[in-house]
Length: 126
Length: 104
Length: 174
Image (cartoon, each protein chain N blue to C red):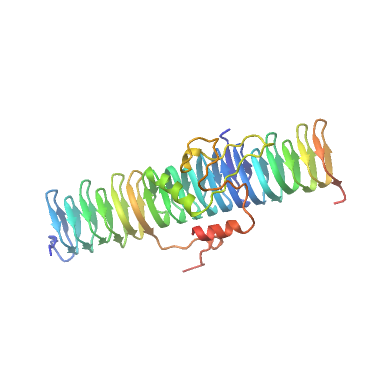
C-alpha cells in the first residue's frame, strides 16, 4: 500500500508528479496535487487537486476536490467539488458545494442534500 | 407587471390558470381561467373555454367564453361558441356563431 | 416569429408547451415542455415537467429531467431533482442538483430513443383548419427520415391524452 508523502500530521502539501504511477491507496492528512496517475483509492483530510493530464481510477474522498484531469470513480468532498472545463469525470459526485464548468465531460450522479419547494413534492424542513 | 405572452409558434395544451393578463399569439388548446384580461391576437388559434375579466378577440376562438366585464370581438376576429359577458361588442368584419347571455 | 413566450409568475399550467421559439418561465408548470429554442427557468418558477430544448438555463426549482441539445446551465438558486443531459453542462456553485449528469452530444440522441421506448410521445399535430404550427424536428425521432411519412414504429401520434393518462405516464417515467 503506497503512502503519499504528507509532511506533517496537520497536513502539508504533497505532489504526485507527472511521471508517477501509483497502484494502491493513498491516504493522508494534508493536501495532495496529482499530476500523474493513481489507480487505487485516495483518502485525504486535506484538499485534492487533479491536474490537467492527471488520471485517477478509483474513488476519492477529501475536504475539497478540484479536477482538471480525469477521475473515474466516485468523488466525495466535505466541502467543495470543482470540475474544470477540461476535466473528465465519471462516477458519483458528493460535496457541500459542487460546480461544473461548461466543457467538462461528466457522466455520473450528483446527490446534493436539499429539499424542493412543497409544491414540487419536497418536504418542508428535512 | 407579470404578464403571460404565448408567442406565435408555441402551442400550449392543457389547463391554464392565470392571476395576470394573458396575451395569446400562438395556439392554445384546453381551458383558460384568467383573473385579469385575455387578449387573443390576430393569428392566434384558441380551442378552449375561456374565463376572464375581459376578453379581446382578434384571432380565432372555438370555445365558450365568460367575462365578468366585457368581450370585444374585433374585425378579423372569429368566435365560435357561447358568450357570457356583461358587455359585448362585435366589430364589423368579425365573425361570430354562438349564443349570447348578457345577464351576468 | 422568435418572440419570447413568457409564462408569467401568476400563471399555472397543467399541460404541455411545445413549438418553435424561446421560453421564459416564471410561473408554475405541471406537464411537459419541448421547444426548439432556449428555455429560461426564472428564480421563483416551479416546474414539475421534463424540459427538452436547444439550451436550458435554470434559476428556479425543477422536478423533472432537463435535456438541452446545446447545453444546460444551472445557476445560483437553481434546485433540480432529475437527470441533466446536454452537449455541455454547467453547474454554478450555488446550484443544487440531485440526479444523473451526462454531457456529450450523443446524450441527446440516446435520450430520444429511450424516451420513445419508455412512453409514447405526445405530438401536437396541426389540425387541418388551423395555420401550420411546426412542432418537432423529425430528425430526433428514431427511424424517421422525412417528415411526410407516418412511421410504423412507435410512438403513435396522439393529438391528446385521455384524462389521467398523462399523470400515470409521468409516474411511470419517474
